[in-house]
Image 1 (cartoon, rainbow, N blue to C red):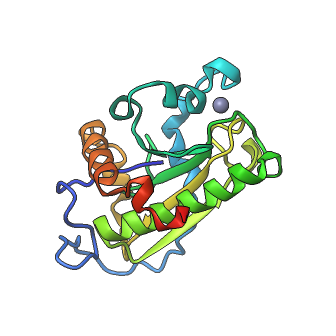
Image 2: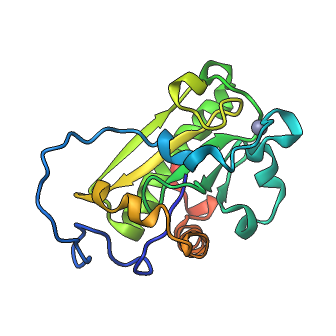
Length: 199
Ligand SMILES: [Zn+2]
């Protein structure tokens, strides 16, 4: 999952110094429903997400800037969500095409966890979110956009962010903003030797 900011990245609604949108609490409950943003209208969802046609298998074979890959590990990698729930919405996933969390090897399990921790550290350093949502949707019934290839969402959250998502989610400028976001996060990502999570 992934993100771009309408202001170039330094400000977020509700963030210190950010341009908060005016408004009053509306009393609606906010639901955690990132899967609804994964494929807006379903128009871009691949008809066949198995094997060679899986976008999560294909992404690592492309250049990082083209596929929005932020960081690569040995067994897993980090990619920006093309349909972000929030700016900086990342996904951590194994290179291997497996659907279930229990199918991960011990090495994959550890690296997915370590990359998730690093993702939180990098996002905190770059954009100072107020909180995070972490999670995996296993199976289409649970909301997974690409159910065949396991992926863990890392979604930064800011106070009031639910109010502006529908706005940025439909802007034509989003692809460029995503590229900017990817470059910023990749630049902030620690080199393996500097990454304390790798010992
Ligand atoms: Zn795959």
